[in-house]
Image (cartoon, rainbow, N blue to C red; front, side, top):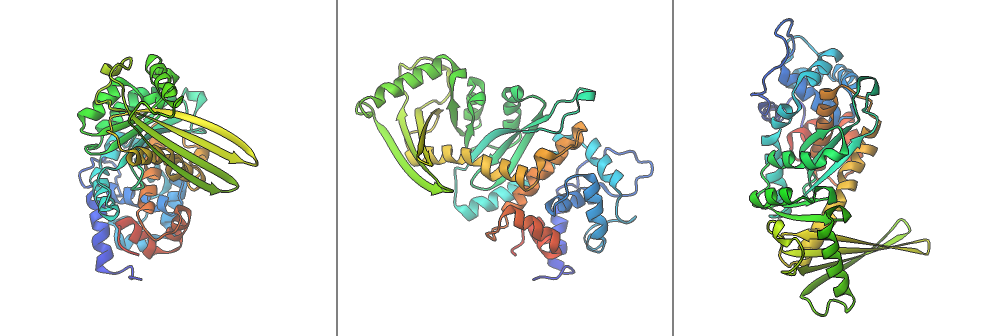
Length: 390
């Protein structure tokens, strides 16, 4: 293990610091004692090691004073709790998140090289912080919409809103934040909108969009067409199929994916930019002798290619386990009572970004274990922060 005084570690942390060099300090210049960049880097490190708010960030920083004084410019020592709280309250969330773009692009490039994936699946989904409301001041629970690069384990962007129903307006803003060229964008039925499909195609990406009753005539036409073809086992259409079976925790799940070209006379087809195929996923789950069947419908700009379609659908489902589950169980985000508007949004971003860093480590350990290791060992913490090999 490399010692903390090494030049290699110093250079790595300097590269992290450089991502925030152009971030304008929104604080008053009166009694300004701690550099903004140092405060932010301490917050990132502390959250990686288990901190869940300004108080725990400050407590961690005091215990890690020797480490932090070696790595960061701290002319007046370790900042107090109020400094971390004030900084995360006054930073504009959009501006704050923008500082991470170059860092994320670097992580995305490394992940693409490591995995060999040239057309990544980017899943868009929402999550509510249920205890972040403040009814006394008219503040609803924070609902954030996240873009998650499924195969890479990276949160690339988020947009915060106060009502789940506002996802339709948040998704276009989310798509503007990053370069989606060459990706496959997957979205639940709420985001299946003609304007969103057009934006994805204009961004030179493809889409796989879930289709439910909220789409009215399109859902009815597509589901009726698929159901009709199912009656003779798709004998009259060019169709591709792929089936997988998994058994775990006393449950057996069989997933059958079916993909076919969109019929030229399908109702409303002209309204959907790039629409080429219809797909379904049939999930049969058997547990304790009881069987349930779920059929889900999708529209897509992808051409016929069943494995690519199946991977997109499965990767989107994976956002719940790979991202949201980790945030709830490992980060205990759903229990957070941070209720100041900018503070809770900036902290939600810190959670998502540090989760991404922890997933990039590649040591085969769980996020929970890597987070503990960051708290236990300074070398591990800096290695994961800087992306160096452990």
